[in-house]
Image (cartoon, rainbow, N blue to C red):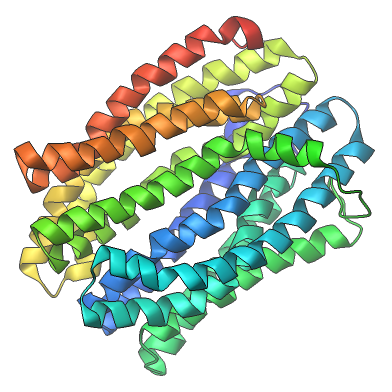
Length: 443
């Protein structure tokens, strides 16, 4: 029997409902690094560094889809909780149509900004050429990525998380297969990796679009709507924190690259790219859980079912605590094995990556709580508080730590920057959760 948003959630039911989202995000994180694996092993370290440089920039552009998906699904789920299904579908349709248009515009802007960004980073000529080859293929298709991010959230709100998982798995399998064909067989190099990514995004973004266009068994369907600023503003406000998180993460990634290029050269960028990719795989457990749980929180908040809201809040904190401990132990144990997947050909680079990953992984004890706190306020349709937590966590604390800590601790300061930043963020998260518990009645 399918689980509905209106159900009471035990630990078992909560994990069953969020499991597809968790697995989906893990698959997304895995196939997002497939390009790196193939490029590193078949093309070389310079091309791999190029993927590491362009990837954060493409995520900045694609973050718009994640913002409207997270913020919009919170608004739509809340509206469904208020028993206003027709209005929910109109809001859903408005969000999808406007996102498609804006996604095309973002792709055009990205094409114009890529070369100035490389000049700003002062990349070497060979690295610059690989960045342009990769970027000029994936960036024009950024609208497909925004749709993919958008529908990940809305499939959950539509009570179809398993369908979202299936689409993601198939899109990931497409990426892996095409990477093998384009890079290992056709020898298209970094361009092959880019085309494989674009085609997988097309599958992940267009398949749910057609699903919602035609009559379906979910809670949502695309149809006629009227342009209104109010639901769009509410959507953008709700999802502001997620947008800031993605923008900040990409900016921080570029800052890491700049610092590592300055201190260690290209090898430092390669090591960070590997650590960042592995970190994203582990982080997917937290992101996937929050993505799956957020519509539940929004629905019961809209329905004024505060007892269930308390239940979801309490169980979520316990699950996040256990997950953080497990992820830390796995990362410490598997660090050498994970690093060797990328750089088995270079022992010094392998040692550098393993050492950095083991320091970086300590952040898993803290980051889950900060991500949940931000997502929780988004689900409650309070984007301002959520945005404050996200802004301080990434844009302020981590940027500050990446700049300051290397002055005293060298490259170890760069690897440890995320730990200090997450600890400072945890203080802010706890304060906000305590300060607003009476207003939203979740504890």
